[in-house]
Every structure is written in C-alpha cells, then in structure tokens.
Image (cartoon, rainbow over all chains, first blue to last red; front, side, top):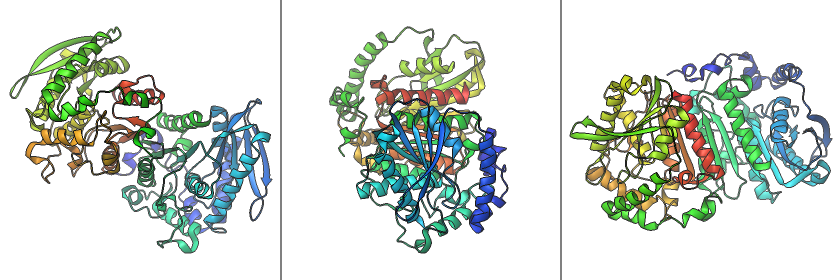
Amino acid sequence: MTFLESLDPEVAHAIDAYPAERYIAVGEDPPRARAMTEAINSVMRANLPPTDVAIEEKTIPGPDCAIPLAIYRPPGSTTRGALLWLHGGGYIVGVERDDARCIEFAEVVGCVVVSVGYRLAPEYTYMAAISDSYAALNWLTGQADALGIEPGRIAIGGGSAGGGLAAGLALYNRDQGGPPLALQLLIYPMLDDLHDNPAGHAVTHPTIWNRDVSFKAWRMYLGAEYGTERVSPYAAAARATDLSGLPPAFVSVGTADLFRDDNIDYAQRLMAAGTPTQLQVYPGMFHGAEMLVPEAAQSLRMRRGYLDAVKRAIG
Amino acid sequence: MAFVDRVDPELAPVLELFPAELMTLIGDDPPAARALLAGLLEEMLKNMPPTDVTIEERGIPGADGEIPIVIYQPPTPVPRPGLLLMHGGGYIVGTAREDINGIGYAEHVGCTVVSVDYRLAPEHSYKEAIADCFAGLNWMVDNASELGVDPKRIAIGGGSAGGGLTAALALYSRDHAGPELAFQLLVYPMLDDRHETPSGYEVTHPNMWHRDVSLKAWKMYLGDERGSESVSPYAAPARAEDLSGLPPAYVIVGTEDLFRDEDIDYAQRLMAAGVPTELQVIPGMFHGGETFVPLAAVSQQMRQGYMDALKRAIG
C-alpha cells in the first residue's frame, strides 16, 4: 500500500492543499515561511465564524524579553479551568494568535486559553522556547485569581511543535518544582529528533510535515546539540530517561503522521512510568488533517477526542 | 507507584471482590474453573435486561464433529452486517454464550452475531481452536442469506483470548484464501505467549488476569511449542512476521492490562504494514474492567469505543 492509499478518503484530497514550497521555506528560509504562514492564518482568521470568546493580546515580562500572549475567554464570570496553549509550526514558524484552535477549546471546554508567543528557531534555540513557556505558566498560576482560574485546573497543551514543547515543559516543570498540572495534551507532538522508526522513514510527502523538513527544523532548534548524544530532553522529550512524576497525558496522532511511532513509543513509556496516559491513534490521518478538513468524520472524531480529554481534566 | 494506585479510582474497589481462586483454578484445574464459571454465568444470564435480540443455539459441521454456535439476531431489516464472535477465557474457559457481548453488538450495531464454541485447552491445542473458528467463519459466509447477513460486511472480533483468536483467524484466513473480511475487532487481545514487556511484568495482581496465570494458559494452549521459536502465529499472532494484507483493525486496551504493551506493539506493527488500524489505550483500566464496573466513566469510554468502532466499520 502506498502512502497516499493509506490516507482516509475524506481527507486525502487535501494533502496537497498547500504548496510544497511552504515546507521547503520552513527548512531553508524561515522569514519567508513565516510570511507564508501568516498569509494563510490571516485568511483562516477572517473566515472563522463569529464567537462570544473574547480575545485579548498582551505582553508579560519574560526572563530575557517581553513575551506576547493571546488570552481567550469564554463569556461569563464563573471560576474556570485554564489551558496554556503552545502553537505549532516546527519550532520555526507560528504565532500566539492560533485562533481556530484556541477559540474551539474556549468554547467547547469553557476554559480560559492562554496562548504563548514563545521565541522561535533559528534565531533562538530550545531553551528560549522552554523559558518563555515556563514564564507564561508561572504568570498564569500567579494571576489565577485575577483571571478567574482555579489553580487545580490548569492544563498545558499544543499541537505538533506545540505538543513537543508541552511535553518538554511538563518535564522542565517537574524538575523545577513548578505548579501542579492537571493534564499535558500532546496532539501529534514533535518530540523526537531522530525519527528512526517506520513512520519516521515512511512519511516523505512534500506538502505535509515530512522527514526532510523535520530534520532541518530540529537542526535549527537544537543548535550545537543537533546530531549528538547530549540532546536535552527539554528540547526533544523522547530523550528523557525518567518519565515518572509527570502530569496525566493525552496523546493523539494519525497513522499517516511522521510522528506516529515517536508518539506511540512516548505514550507507551509514559504508561510504563506510571503516568496516567490515554493514547488515540486514528487511521488515515496525516499531520494536521483534522484542522485542514475539519468536517471529515475522522477529523471530527480526532478533535472530539482531545477536546473531551481537556474537558474531563479541567472542564 | 503500586499497581492498585494506578487503577482508576472507580474500578479499584472491585479488585478485592474477585475471588483470586478463579485465576488459580484456570491455571491449575481447568475443569473446576469451568464449573465455577458455569455457576456465575447462570446468575449473569438470569440478570440480563430484557432484549429484542433473539438467541438461538445450534450446531454446525466441523472437521472433527459438530461445532456448537450461538446466533444473536436483532429485529432489524435484512441484509444486516455480521460479526463472528470469539469469546474470551484464556483459551481455557468460557462459552459461546457470551451474551453481554453477543446481545451488546447485535443491539448497538444492528448486526447478526455468530458466536463460536471453539474447542479449549488443555484438552485441545490452538490447532483445534483456529480450525473451529475458521469453520464458523466459512459457515457464516456460506449461509449469509439464510442468516440475513450481507457477506460484504462481515467482521470478526472478540475480547482477551477471543481477541487473540480474532487476530489469528485474520492471519489464517488471509493465508488460506478464506473469505474477505471487513474488519478485525481486537479488544485487549491475548496475542503474545512471552509477555516480555513492561506491562507483561507489571501486572501480577492475583485477582485479575496476570502474568502467572497467563503463562500457564499459554503452556496449555501451545503444548510443546510454548517458549520455543516455532510458536505458530495462528496461536500467538505477535509471532507473525508478515502483517500485510490483513483486514482493517481496531485495537483497544487499558493501561493496567497485562497485554498493554503487546497490544500496542501489534497495532504499531499493523500500521507499519499498511493495515488501516485504530488504536485506543484507556488510562487506569485493567483487563475486562469495563464488564465488571460498567458504569465507571472509563468503562463507558472503553465500551463505547469498541462498540462504535464496529458500527463505523460494518454498521
């Protein structure tokens, strides 16, 4: 069976929705890739249905510089859970205004979503992203009263690079004695720089996140550590040797995703370490397909799966 | 973290309610285990809620004599989808009157269910079990119109040993030019005689399916082949080297199940072989927990998971 034949029929048509050029630019010309991504995002934002969720942009002080945040609040004034959201983009592109996803979490879960504009590679390597995310998490817990958030109901999560960063942040937060977390939501997380497994070799299609662009992104994100034995687990969570004492995890990935086996293996290791972990693997879904073809049955199931997981944890 | 602390809080109380005696008897005195279960089964059948599903017990011709089967028919229009059901019981105990699943699938999916009373170990080995199931499958296909079944929508499925037999039957049917199958439903399947994984060592609690009883059951089921390199994949599907060309699969297991890692590994190998495969791993769930505490949230999630999977595939 070829890669294309393995796709869910309802999402297969969208695999070439964006030009291959986009991922070539991620690997070779990040500023151009950011411009292309922002062009796509601005169209998507303009086409979002009206919402009651209020969106506020603000900056908070960070360890090295100000950190931009986007805060999404559902209407009403009850005390809520909160999701610290880390956007995707291969650690190279993407911004905190991840409206389609954040609005959906705020609406369906009824939680406050704080989305972090963490610093990106290649201008910064992974410790900048981790420090910014950790600073935002501490800001969120420190402001819990003002934000109307219950401190016991705080989750972290993200998709793709954001999922990898969430896994790295869960490790960093554990090791630093940071605030307790109700959930780490790992949506097809980018957490292994090696991709040395069947899916890591099989997914080479140029218009989706593929082996070649992924290695280029890892090289920028890891800097001098790339290709060595001393890659930090805060950068590539799969490198962590101790996965005990972490918050409950929810891992979701499609079978046609470059990260499929990375993600299954990580979930399996979390389980062996005694971390309460749910794993959902959806047949025929490629990386990001549930956002690209949102009405496909499998996309609805995948989103319902992780939205419900957040709702159970902090809703 | 102790095993009991990892079990979902809603399920933990029943751990102590099970008689450890049952597992001991399965491993050491199968006839006594069957007698004990026959009593429990009679009680359970008396307490089943009323249903519109009709239940017929009959015999079909097999290679070595008659094979008893049970047919569950829902009151829905024909042609219906069909499920060949293999019951659980460690290959040692259990009967085709697995009403909770026979009725459950017939009601939820609207399918005809044919449940096979395959021959059990230690009186018989895997060869008889697989022969009986293959005979049951061929009979179901040959008699599709009499049964009101659409031969293009026939799935095979089962839980525990029944899940293992399902996986084995999928391999056997592929290799022996058997009927085309729409789906294989693998509910915490018993697939690997070695249990050389983290969960294969973790789960030793005496009141549930655990390492010791499982190795004893495999010894009876495999006969001389146990532990050798020549174990047949029709007995232990994890031993199969080629998983390509199999029907679409659904695998579900709990994190506190002895079979967790072998089931995840098998699903991962199916995916790598290009078989459309869905995998769900439910946190805090032990082997069969959803049948003992059906109202617990994780139980409902699990049962809904496999019931809906069958419905999507053939319903």
